[in-house]
Image 1 (cartoon, rainbow, N blue to C red):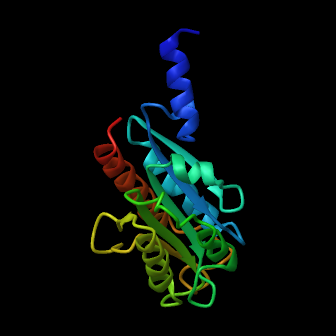
Image 2: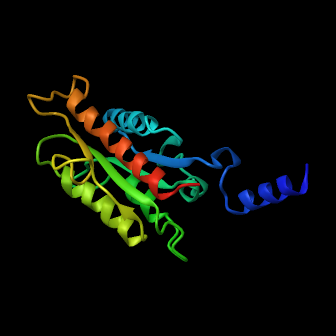
Amino acid sequence: MNKFAKTFFFIMTMLWIPVSYAGETLVLISYHSVTGNTEAMARAVMEGASQVEGVRVVLKTVDQTSWEDLKAADAIIVGSPVYNANVTPEVSAFIASWPFEEAPLKGKLGAAFVTAGGVSAGEELVQMNILQSMLIFGMIVMGGPDWSSPFGASAIRGESFFPQDEPIHPDFLEKGRALGERVASMAKKLYVK
């Protein structure tokens, strides 16, 4: 191994950035899902982000997501079911575990998506809770691409017109894809490597 390669490997190791991410914009999608609905939205967000050339997308549950994943990411998109108008305890613990000292997440893009058991069941509150937490860590937060998803993407389940026993309505999945694509596009512009 030549001197340049050794130096490069050392620097990448010290920065906790996996060598496979070198030169790519990295979007991390981290979520918690109880019934599979939030996972379906997470996959839609991933589809949208994956459409942007030069962007690598990592999809993990909150319990699979490591500090190294957070540090390596240029953008972090967090998803949660609505739980009594809050994020789930698992997502709350995940965000509470983020390092605060020396602001290591400062300047990273952040976004949110949620699934709710009914209309006006707290979906916008939960999106805002996630975004507010990201702001505390110095992140740059963004919502969806238009007025119909200003705080991120959301899906409704459990109403007569969106029954729990049917797949998530395609319109909600499209909002997830649009959010993923928007965040990935902006991350690529902001974090040129």
